[in-house]
Amino acid sequence: MIQYSDNEMMALAAGRFIKDGDIVFAGTGVSMLAATAAKRIFAPKAVIFFETGGIDPSLDEIPMAVADLRVMTGTSLNSGLIEAFSIVGHRKLHTVAFLGAAQIDRYGNLNTTCIGDYFKPRTRFSGSGGACDVAAYASGVITFMQHEKRRFVEKLDYLTSVGWYKGGNSRKELGLRRGGALAVVTNLGVLRFHEETKEMYLTEYFPGVTVEKIVESTGFPIDTSMAVEAESPTPGELQILREEVDPQRLICQAILAAPQR
Amino acid sequence: MNRYPEIADRLMGLDEAVSRFVKDGCQLAIGGFTITRNPMAVAYEIVRQRVKDIHLVCHSHGQALDVLIGAGCVRRLEIAYGGNGRYAPTCVRFKKAVQRSEIEFEDYSNYQMSLRFLAGALGMPFLPTKSGLGSDLMNYEGFSPDIRKEAKVASRKYAMMDNPFSEERDEVVLLPALTPDVTILHAQYVGDDGTVRIKGLTFADIEQAKAADTVIITCEDIVPSSFIRMDPDQNSLPPFFVDAIVKAPYGAHPTACYGFYDYDPKHLNLYRKVAEDDALFKGYLDEWVYGVNSWEDYLAKVGMEMILKIKANPVIGYAPGLDRK
Image (cartoon, rainbow over all chains, first blue to last red):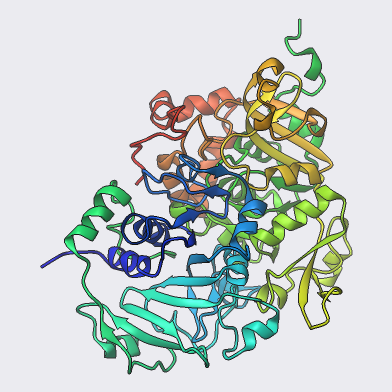
């Protein structure tokens, strides 16, 4: 039987969403693994870029942060934040962002700011960074989550980054012209959003995971009627992940997905 | 005989740069991003001189932000992100300071903060964006009405406006400009004419510098202007934006500096560990900041073994094969 970590399964499941020609915005951790895997395995003509301004780096080693020197080497262009955001929202480009979050709701809105009261939080997190911005401007967002009830919640403690907002047409009504939550990839499976209601539903459960386990680990009701079992990673995919994408095994072997808190 | 007559009046040591320009209560912007090119030598000197009540304005920052907050230099913070990548997904002393209500803080996003610096650089009172629509960034004001009356604090966090060029409803968020009293940056090179060259990514450093009243630059080296002017496309700031120049090799340690050295994983891991504990953190400051007499002393503590380990391959820009666990 093939052995693989949660991070490897998640990176591959997310990588499959990327198509040739996509411009991929990568964050820290498993999102970095997924973006690199997407380019090396599924969509060689996708371009990875970072909010810090690095565009299409060679990524011979996996970066540990979006400002890592490894996002500045072998690039087509090194620039800065303003330039990077002119790419995220560019009308000619199909941009897909990989994000992580501490909490998510049924419409794919994300919290990376705090748990508890904003002014006196039980736990304070890093904050938006560029997440709120790419959630507003990108063509689509794929979010990595640890699948736990306390993270899949009815109501976010703080709405940092807008997904489908309140569902239906509400995102457009806010004045956001495109984008929205495309998918959520967890350590248990893959979820997408209903075309009209914009509510989250289960599309895939990972091998060894039951639908019941996912329902139990989700703090709001989800439709599971369309769910199928995901395919295991192939030895070839894992080999590329381990030998080319993350040869030092800095993220491949970690158990938790980003963000770790 | 001064080797650099053109910048003689601006060339100084860390102690002078901080004592002359970084005052109690000043609004301060720091260059770099999370674990790269933080102006650490200046940040440590600010701590050493026990500057108080700083109003820190940041996009995504890491080590310098956390040391300044942890040492009690910061009273007020405007921030998009406090993290050290995989080495501290949330900066520990920042997290503790917020949880214990020890600092006044207000959240923005990276693009919002970058636009605020750009507005300051352009001499504009505000700039519009779509970023933030629907987000709690627009629902929670961190600063009280009393704080909003103080100097250098925007009278409102933001304002909303309908696109005046559209027939249909089309809302935008207006963000107030930032004009920090001081911006501190670490660059690879300063020419002996004062021209600044930043290699690798520039983040929002250039906007932060142009928005500020005073700019302090630390650099890896001072190079002849004949070299700097041979390839001016590579340069970042003209000399007249720069008020103080300090030569501080490895001045971003333990964060990285493209082409010169990588981040120091051992130090970042040590820092995260000590930052979790108040007593250990105090011991860290005593050992690495207060107890160090000069930048050379600090680098001696880092040690030649680590200096060589993190030394970047000058062609690749980082240290390939560095143990980064």
